[in-house]
Image (cartoon, rainbow, N blue to C red):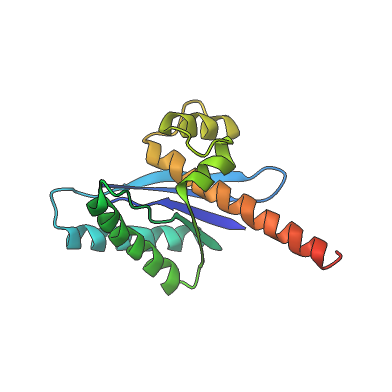
Length: 169
């Protein structure tokens, strides 16, 4: 199962592509889409859509995993702006009929590091260790996107195991 994990942003959107097969998921690619913060939001969203569409075309994921929208009462504008980027991600996945999975940030951190409130540095080091990378993925958005993909793969595998057990397989 090929999973693309996406960490949405209006300046930097991280992505990570993983072939999820036990016992060891395979890292396919990871990187960022950089958007010009001087451009109007409409232009950035159009650019994000174009870049994501290219990634979906190149990697042909079975599943798109994205972080759920989180709104902190002190920063509601951030959540609204991130909602725009998430909307573009959902649009691209929907147009290509790619299964969509969404996870809370603390669930992603828990699934990957064992701690639901892990720092950016902990996420980077954990991802580095999982695939024996020479250095932590940078910027942190890449590690976050790979963590989203890993969390998705693990949870889908767990669901399959439970369903198989219930079906007596």
